[in-house]
Length: 399
Image (spheres, rainbow, N blue to C red):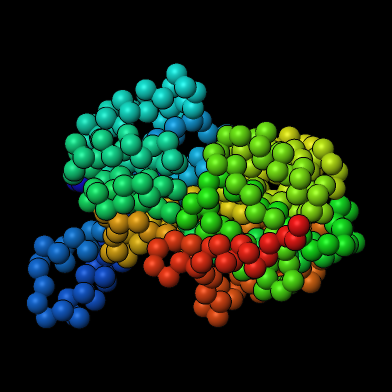
């Protein structure tokens, strides 16, 4: 850790003048001393070494590495993670290294070997990786390096099995509630192109599982909050790659059931529903996880009303904020929602272009209701999970 402190100070000093460096150092020490004095005042019994640690804590710069099982430039999870860490780096809070390991099949053996290499080096306070492709590899390495700390985002496969791993996940039900509020209002706004007289939404999920259904529970709850007569056509591709099946479902939703907005929550497979909307010219699509208006080509982007976001970068900033406050969560899963900035909805581009002032206000009100606790969004996960079959039946399309 001492090496991390000295290296962090050296890195920060390299980009500022000598005078600025010493002023920043002095200010940090003053803040640290004040924190130590406050701790000593509130605690009659204290360890002198702990007081010294508190005094020096503002000078500690954590050394972090982000392992990208793909490449930057994805306009999705990896870019979000990098942006959050870059913010921390710019603030002088971390020293950052990023390794792009590649995302092709031939690159995958490097993912495990790179994890081993950075763990063996002992150079990093925190090793960060993410997505469903990494948990098996991380489990293997984290078990062999119990003193190394790891963060994995958007996965909870092995929660609690390693005391040196933190799983960051995201409250899909919060996200679904906001998206459902938006979609429930948009499907009745016949002033917008492609919106018909019927209040029917679509949902193409990947697997009929608690996580995917957590999106759905929020979606239905939000839509029913603004239109109690809403109908939702729910179907599952049973995987995350079959775009053809999702397109087939999308075409049926649109042509047979007059669905005019479909939320695709099935990874790449869900994009088939966007293709169905494009082919028919009679519906809109809502993206998931990242801003799909940015990742799609021009044709599909033009019919994507918004996307529900998992804000990876915000969640990493949250972690370091908690760390600085003396709160750690190793060996657990932390699920971040609207309150922590872990999820959100895209509000520029097509959202801003097509949503009425009343719809924009209603979406903001829905977010605030979740934030202040006046609305507690039900969930499909764990104890107290809703009866998902009854919920789906309550909005089932006739016929």
